[in-house]
Length: 232
Ligand code: APR
Image (cartoon, rainbow, N blue to C red; front, top):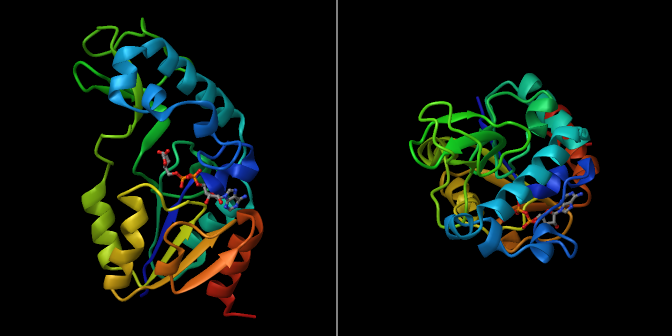
């Protein structure tokens, strides 16, 4: 039966009140990537990086899934084949909306990682430079998110899913960050039908067979209805 692979980005959580990165009022308009989203930035100023992620962790914990998150969970339940959600987002709104087995290729705000011993645990709501690692007790906790210059997580599994999918959708992502921006090419090579669902054309819009523009909370339910009930 047909496997659907869905890639999501910050745009799917925008209507839940979480900021995107590259929109005019996005996070990268307020913070320098080098300062808060690189290992060098963390080494240079860990206090600033903890403050940046603590604020995002608190905001994400208070956010609620929107209709787009919820309808993707319905698609996972009602589609006769496998539906795999790969997200670049570090919030857990897909899970809050009922989705299963979400692949977080950029990690999650809910995760903590020990920069010294590699131990992973559930992050406290706020971390700082004194937060001890539960395994090695050293004060070397960092957010378990993938920074620029670091390898994205679960790539082998993601490429396996892409190689076997017959439908690929990218939702709420600007297509400016790799390897995610090239997933559409992998899906096309596997013979999949590809669709971009976004507020505006992404940097890789020309790679898709179909495009649907608008807010995710409106266009994603329409797309799922067309998949489950056939185009109206
Ligand atoms: N509905 C649908 N799409 C939306 C909405 C909305 N309500 N609001 C914004 N968008 C779209 C924007 O048009 C944009 O194309 O979502 C996209 C968000 O793009 P980015 O801010 O670049 O976010 P994303 O693509 O997820 O960034 C990828 O970059 O900084 C790194 O690690 C970070 O995971 C992130 C990665």
